[in-house]
Image (cartoon, rainbow, N blue to C red; front, side, top):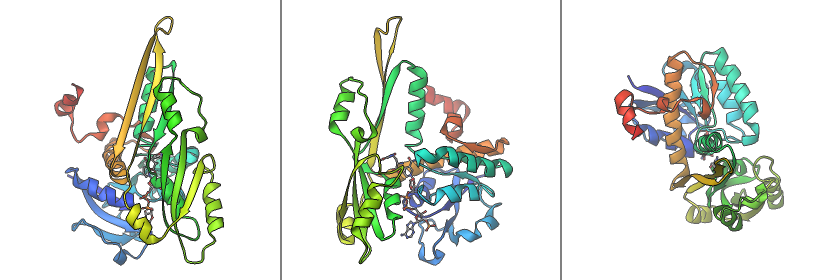
Length: 328
Ligand SMILES: NC(=O)C1=CN([C@@H]2O[C@H](COP(=O)(O)OP(=O)(O)OC[C@H]3O[C@@H](n4cnc5c(N)ncnc54)[C@H](OP(=O)(O)O)[C@@H]3O)[C@@H](O)[C@H]2O)C=CC1
Ligand SMILES: N[C@@H](C[C@H]1CC(C(=O)O)=NO1)C(=O)O
């Protein structure tokens, strides 16, 4: 029997999840839920239907895992705990500073309702988190760095789109070359947040909006921009569509460490991603964790989990001898 999936929130990530389900034969998309008028939201899966989010609770027995595809800035803090009352849920929550609060809220809802809620799934947080954790557990005497881009951060782009007066926008994350070079040269530099990345925003403002206010709100935004050197460009909708239509991204996690009685041996662990489509890759990670959420729930597990709590085997559509072929 297929794992029955619901998508809540139909933006870049929602569309990516719909596509990723097509590549997972053990899953089927049952429904897409939106806060907009369902008649205005067109999906590509003939066997599924679009509903208003108010209809979701009625379908709690028809969906095994609800994948929350809203924005981290304002949607997921409300939506994930809310829908964990009725569903196993997976989200991509990435406001790093607010993860403890989000975990607690989802854990309360999921524990009380006997559901599994896996939060902060994707690549960062997500796959990069796993690799930072593995590297620190293995090379205990070492130093690690995370670099992103140059690419489009969906979280930061979502955050700027939520500002009053912003019609659309995209944010590029750009690694500082000198910092990259120092790390690559094994200099193990001490780097502040500001010394590692800069951020560049391309914003389409509503007619008559106060551009100075928008720029200031972006640059001072806690948890997103206030610790970075950020530039803001105001452009037309046509320019955004013409020059900034893609959502590529990537980055790497690197840890250098030493072993030996006198630290005589050095080692480097590196995990890197080059993504044509940030949303499609992120969605592919999320769909694998939806399989895990379903299986863990079927075993009677409940409450909030992160990628650290999910045994890798839960992610794979393979099992037993077929799965063990990945060992070699
Ligand atoms: N952990 C990780 O590695 C990653 C995490 N993310 C997270 O994913 C989140 C979602 O990103 P993304 O999908 O790009 O965000 P979008 O802005 O595309 O979508 C967010 C929500 O906005 C609404 N929406 C989408 N399009 C429209 C529209 N045309 N008009 C009105 N409302 C619209 C949708 O809700 P509705 O249908 O209800 O209207 C949707 O759920 C990000 O905030 C980020 O935090 C992203 C990438 C990686
Ligand atoms: N969560 C990020 C994924 C990576 C990219 C990123 C950044 O560019 O700041 N941080 O983490 C996203 O929303 O795209």
